[in-house]
Length: 396
Image (cartoon, helix red, strand yellow):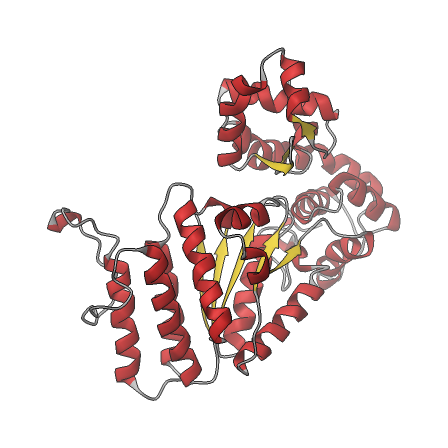
């Protein structure tokens, strides 16, 4: 098969494999857009799931849908130890520009941009030197007395209200999409919940769509007890067999090629139905196939190449971020679960390592902060990356 035509290569194809089996989420978001635009109450949305299930791709598709509906839309990726104010300012600036195209009152748009600029400039510390001050690139004077108190919770409520009212002027809304939402600082999570609560009370046309690891609901509820009422949670998991087959066959058929049923069986067994793995094994199988259709032998020949790429780019890049003490903890988890995608008891990890549970808390907490593990339930810990335990047990 021609490697240049490989439909599983990053960016190839008209519809990424990660979107197979996600029609329910896409259709539900269409309903959200319609309800909010008509002034009806609707909760913001949180997508949760392990790494490799296609949350980021789905988030991008939801953003595209919002824009097609005439909404303003901005997307950010939260980063550990980074304040929300600066990236949020850039995302909402983009959303306002989307709305400005449809708005008939330039002065009104500039007014909201002035509030946004005031919000953004609070990133700068009062004693910062002029050369060290960040400028948000908004070509209007900063407003005063609105979203500029320096208290992120107050400012975010006021800013969201201003931006939502601008969207209401043109009969649409604003979608703010936040990837890796579990990495937000605690004060920013609290402010985001407070702002969403205010918007839900007023029916303002602004929705937050977050994506993150399975413990996101716990992160939000730890911040605000009422957070469970603010968001609709959607668990994004590995694909069912029918959808996994579609993720393989659709891109192949677009290239006027085929794949044997036995090869589909082998790809599903290798990938476990996880979209990222489907793409990796599918790409390798296409490159390994000397002729059409792809056979089970092609998949078997290609598997080591796919596993090698995953070991470096998907598993290895994360393993390298761990300290020796953290790697010891990870390997203990893998041994206790025998490489399966299951949770391990924190007490069991301590017994396995012959240590007191309290002595392992720093390593566990650091691994959670790095996004390598999450608290599956009280007293249990699990990998955020599918097949990570299998990878660890297979290392030399």
